[in-house]
Amino acid sequence: MPCLNWEPKNTQFNVYILGISAYYHDSAACLLKDGKIVFAAQEERFTRKKHDDSFPINAVNSALSSEGIEASDIDLVIFYEKPFSKFKRIIDTYARNSPRGFWSFRRAMKAWLGTKLWMEDEMRKILGYKGTFLYAGHHESHAASAFYSSPFDSAAVLNMDGVGESSTTSIWKGNGNQLEAIEEQHFPHSLGLFYSAFTYYCGFKVNSGEYKLMGLAPYGKPVYADLIKEHFISWSEKGEIKLNLSHYNYETGSRMLHSRAYTTLGRPPRKPEAEMDAFYMDIAASVQKVTEEIVIAMSKYALKTTGTNAICLAGGVALNCKANGELFEKLENSKIWVQPAAGDAGGAVGAALVAWYGYLKKQRETTNDSPVDHVYLGPDFGGATIEAELTRHQLTFHPMEMSVVAEALENKKVVGWFQGRMEFGPRALGNRSILASPLYVDMKTHVNRAIKKREGFRPFAPVVKEDEANEWFSGQIPTRYMLFTVNSDRKSQIPSCIHEDGTARLQTVRKDDNERLYELLDTFEKKTGCPVLINTSFNVRGEPIVCTPLDAIRCFFQTDMDVLALGNYVLFKTDNTNPSEELMTSQSYELD
Image (tube, rainbow, N blue to C red; front, side):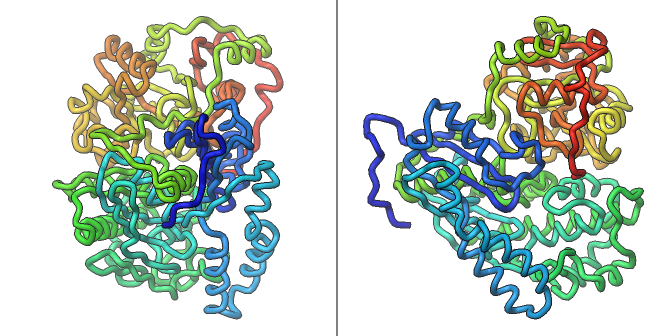
């Protein structure tokens, strides 16, 4: 990758790089300041449209505001993929399958010819930006997001997703500030699309409900794994996959699977919102098992072919924490790093890092710990802003005392927890969270139905003080970003956060990571003897995680949450029995 003939606008000031992902799903913006991530956020949090794919103007404006700069102060803007390469793949796909898929092709052309091919002009217009504009490859952005954020000097990088421009899986080798592409596999053979096809088959939304398929799997048995291997997917020793394309329909149609797939499986797809039965649970378990086997095969080959003992994972498949947990168990002598925002939103981070290390050739320093100190990279709202919002709605509130919140949790109350800067990525990690006690058998059902308004089978993640994690969980510890499942033999003690198969998608917390959350866990432990809480995202089904104090207050009053800890203040539902019409006006969210 050549170094640009480039100099910062003013060498006396900081170098700002803006990374952008947009126009597919999970649009996001990332701002680097002298190579350090100072801001990153998804556009959905601002627009309240889940998985928003539009240009992330609100995220960009929030990033600029956080640094007190204007668009004219940005030195480089870089987009996370190459539009013309992606356009060529769409044209080639249609040519290969013509005349099938004409109407799907026509819809795609309308979007591409209208905006996507001219996105640089569009983005310059939206931003008012006149400086240098760059493009990174989709999988290059994924690889950069994983390797450059890792603690490794040298590592294999494995990207697994649906499809970028044309790549669906790629292996890279990272060394210092260099990233070298080793091998790649191309559309239409894709592990991500395989998983999404069965997400659709089990009645969930593609590019949204894949985590539901993962959560459903422990309720079933992998009795269809051999059938799936025989008719839907096969792979070589190095993990290179081959799909039986006669069973899939995503190249030319609006459905993921062809009708002949239903004949092979013996039943049609489950209708969204229909009652879940054991058949689809078994399908989910089978697909999950097959996926884990392929991820392990791919990872072992990536380590072997790069000659390294560390591996970094990125792409949407890398958010499969159950597969990550199995991989950790199988790679006993190798180290693993998973980029916390491994999906397309993280492409904004990767693109910015491509510009810093790849184009500007900056040197890289690594430590024994991850250079990603935390993922609290979104906007913050100070105490004055929060107090003004509470006062505007004439709400009764009190100074927050940790012992009062811990006592409420002990007494089976559900707490909305809104603190500090918003998390970047798909997980709520203790700043935009709903917290509850794991000690009650029925708490999972209560939070799913009365708070989250979602399916009852959905599991909840535990958050635990890192220094006591080994007393309650085994396996990959620490796991600070909820990216690995671990085992636990404490289900009888914390029944509401251990899944059907005895695993949990764990978050560990150090005092330095999140002092206020750590203090709450410590206070709860002193009252109950348990340093664990249920931690789920602060939102209802179909809604993005809350961003602003107003988002949090609305969600609080429109659910059966009992307590809201909002910065330095706490509200009790019992003190506020007549909230304003603005707070009680239901927001409309498309079901996920």
